[in-house]
Length: 587
Image 1: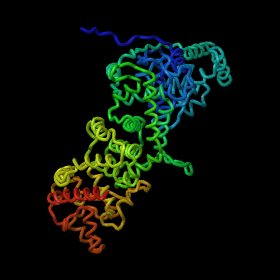
Image 2 (image 1 turned 30 degrees about the vertical axis):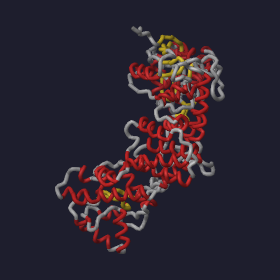
Image 3 (image 1 turned 30 degrees about the horizontal axis):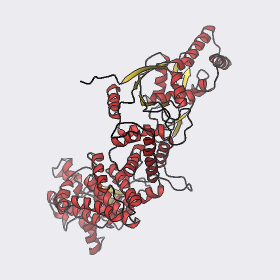
Image 4 (image 1 turned 180 degrees about the vertical axis):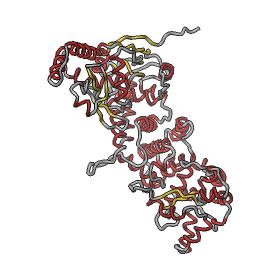
């Protein structure tokens, strides 16, 4: 019978000790240039609680396996290149304290740099987030970072503040004493006690995640990507920095003349998303769990950790990530989506489908040598297929693992293409196109993969905007910046008219098959007239062949305006499925 043992120990620190261990790299706080999600007001509240002597929670560390003698991958500037403890819980608190005590800047969620400036009023011990009024008021220390960053003693600090304050206001002896006392108390926050629970290195990441969830009142669940990104912070920090630099640049258009950039209109990727692409390319894995163990240097057969094995696996990840972040690859992949009729993030229902399509693009290009002209069409088809069918919506890691297994060991173009084509053909049967897809189009959702596929197909087929000579693809160009969207979703059988007929169910009124994309002036002009009224007027503006082609590419049957609403929906769903099929097959 096995004996259960405590898997953690309790260790007490003072704040100065914690900051010292962070400085020398013994505790693996990721570099300060990480997205920092706390608002300054929350940092203010943290300092206020500590100043009043209130507890601010446990820290949770995880002992790093075999740190001694291990070589860091990449160039480190810390005294201890490999941290002996990784932070599992408390990263935001420690980042706050480190940033304020060391006067460091942080990045917010949008990767914009900001200074955490917490102000303190010594007269009454009050903390505030610094603002213009506080900075002008001699009663306040506008940025408490200066107290510790200056290197001055407590005596010098108190004396200097009182001298400058007395030059502007008169103070009683009691007020001076109170101010001195409060400043000393603030200065002594360096001695604030913390308790850390340190989990043994023998505990695996699933147990650590379970411990974290059980003790964390906010119930934030750690995932495998969190653990791998923590490992990158410790063993290959420039790799994580490169990921985050790419993500930051993807969010803002580049300045004129600044050269190529990852900015795009499809996705603002996060580090863990790009990490998944690197893992799929480098290790042919959709599940991150086994990769995490490998990157720690664990032999999956023996369970033994080895620094040499860890270095080898990080070398694989390093090469894969360089391919993933290569702007030439990134932009060529995104052009495959445009070629498939998808124009922007507004048409992306599954970011997993996009990211995994990028992984297959890289595998096809780098490992299998598929010619670019062929790969563009193949990946465009694959993304169209994966998005339309919701392939990576349920259990995406498991599905991707299975897909990667199908191409594992393939190193040539033809077999790689054949596997993807076979996977698509096995799902997109005639029954799918004629039965499954029309049924899926019976929806009132505005963000529906079938709807996006329908618009993508219209782009592929060069469809004109309904009742217009302009093309759909031109008016949904994300580069267009207008006060009002050029295209609007229009009820072919207007809502007000249907309500006047007694229909009140919005799921019926807002059926996907009751919508078409119109230019907004046209939409306003039609107003609440039924199609039996407005269609005849509009038809006069078009030649018969133009009218016929427009109706065909908008899945509108002949004389649809005279059909009953229920019959119209049934016929149009079938025709919309046909347009989607034509668009896909045109690839």
